[in-house]
Length: 79
View (spheres, rainbow, N blue to C red):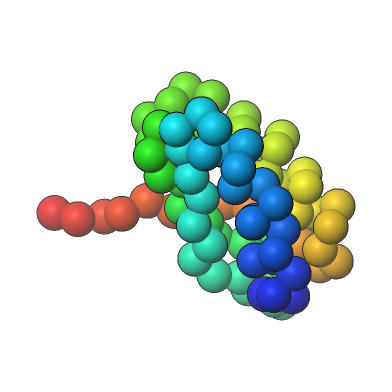
């Protein structure tokens, strides 16, 4: 599953980069199908980033990778 997710993210990445953002794969829970990613660049703080994540990234991953149920954005928690 991980390899398919990584390959699909590589397909998605150019669209995000064209707007100054990017996406990094963090992890996948193969039991629940939840994929964790980190949106970076212009995606950080963008009011449309949640829409991009759910309607774009999540939809594409769910369509292309069996078992993916959701995609969530994680953030850096540096104090």
